[in-house]
Amino acid sequence: MLQIELLLRTLTKPEVDLVKKINVRGKQRQVLLALIQGREQGHRVRAHDLGLSPEHFHQILSVLLQKCYATLAGNDLLEVATLLISKNLTKLLHQQLKLLEVRLKDAPRSEQEAFYRMAFETSQWITYDDVILPLVKHFGKRYLQVKAHPRLGDNLFIEIRILRNTISEVYGAGIPGAEKKKRLWLKLESYRAKVYALDNEKARYQLHCAFCEYYILVARDPLAAFTHLHAAEQYVHAIVEPLQNEERSFLAAQHADIELMLGNYQQAYDRYTQIWCAPEMALFVRRSFYHTIRFAEVATIVGDRSRAVAILDEHIDRGRENLFLCSKLMRYIVIALLEGEVEKARTLIDEAFKYNSGKSYAYFTDVRTRFLEVACAYIAGDWQLASSLITRALQFIRRKKVRVINSDFGYYFKYIEAAIRYQETGKPIPAKVEERIKRTGHFRFFALVLDQISAGVKTLKTMLVFGVLTI
Image (cartoon, rainbow, N blue to C red; front, top):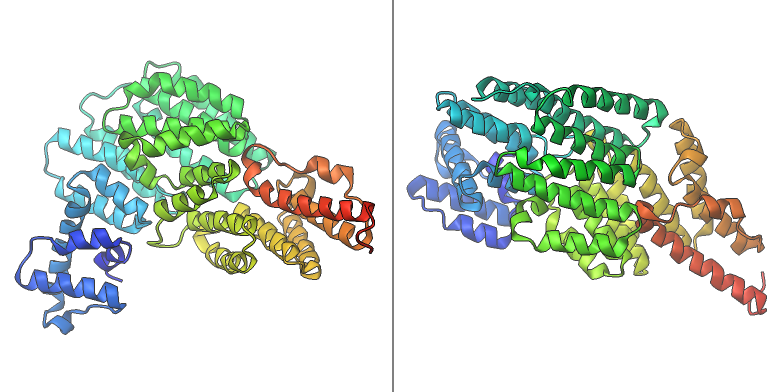
C-alpha cells in the first residue's frame, strides 16, 4: 500500500476534512481527491487510472504526503513523530526520519545536532518490536559526531538510552528468569559506576530512568522504582527542550504507574487524569500506548468503566497491528466480561489470539488471553470447555519451562479449576490456591474477573448452606 494511503486510512473524519483543504491544484488536486475517495470507498488508486506516468504519480504522492504532515502536525518533527506513532505508522516514521536526514546533510551543524537529537529519541518511542536498533544506533552516533559541545559521558547517555529497549523487550518476552534479571541488573550497576565517575547529568538521568523501568517492568519492585524516579527528577532539567517537557510527562506517568503497583488505585487514577487533562502533556498522551493501557486499567479498577473504554477508543488507533493492539483488546475483553457481555468477549478473544503473532508475539499476552478464554467459558457455564482450556494452558506454561508456582497467571487457572470442582462436587477451593492468587497492584485489573467468579462461588456456597440447591 502507498505511504499516503496508509496515513489516510488511519485518519478521523475531522482530520480528513483538514486534508481536503490542502492548497494544491491541477493534477495534485486530482490525485488528492482520488486518494480520499479511494479511502472512503475501499479501493486503490493507480497511476494509469488518472492518466499519469508512474514517475509523475509517485512524485505527486511524495509532495502530497509532506503536505499532509504539515497540515496535520505542522513542520515540527516532534509533532510529526507523535502523529505517526499515535497512528501505529512506525514504518512511515522511519522513512520520514531518513528523508529528513538526507535533506539536512548540508545544513548548519546546529540544525543537524537538533535533528539527530530528536531522531535518536523519537525512533525509540515506538514499541520494542518495531524498534530498528541499527537505525537508532546510527542516529545516536551521528548525534555525538555533530554535537557542538561534547562532554565526557555523552556516549553513556546514548548507550543507556538504547539499553532501555532491552528492558522493554525482556518485559514483553514475559519470562525473564532469575539469570536474565541478574544480567540486566549487573549491566545497570556497571553503568552506574561509570556514570557517577563523570559529571554528566544527562547520562545520570538516563541511568535512573533505566533503573526505574527495570524495577517496574522486570523486577517489579515499586519502592525501588520510586527511588530512581525521584533521582531522575533531579536530573531531568539537563535534557534540552522540547524533549525536556516530554521527559517530564514520562516521569509523571511513571509515578502514576508506581502508585498502581503499590495498590494506591485512586491516587493512580487521579494522577493519570491530571496527565490526560494537561495541555503540555498532550503529545505524550497521544503516543504513550503503555500508559494509555494503565490508565484504562485503573479507571476500571475504581469503577469508571465507561472512562476506560473511552480512553482505549481514543488513544490507540489501528494503523497497523502491534503488541499494544493485543493489549487493548484484552482490556476490552475484561470490561466485556465484567459487563456480562460474553459473546462480545469471545469475539475479542479470537481477535487477540490472531494479532498476537509474528514480531508482535508476547508470552504475557498469550497467557493472559488464555486466562480470559477460560474465564469466558466458565462464566458462560461451559465448564467442560473451561476444564479443557485449563489443561492446555497449564501444558503451554510448562512447555515454556516455567513452573506454575512461578507463573503470574498459573494459579489463576488453578483457581478456576478448583471453582469448577467446587461447583460439581462441593469440594472447597484449597487454601493454598487462594493464597497464591495475585490480586493486588498491577494484577488487580485481571483479578477483577476472578472476583466475579469468586462472587458466583460464594453465592453457590450460600445456597448449599441454606439448602436451596442440591448437587
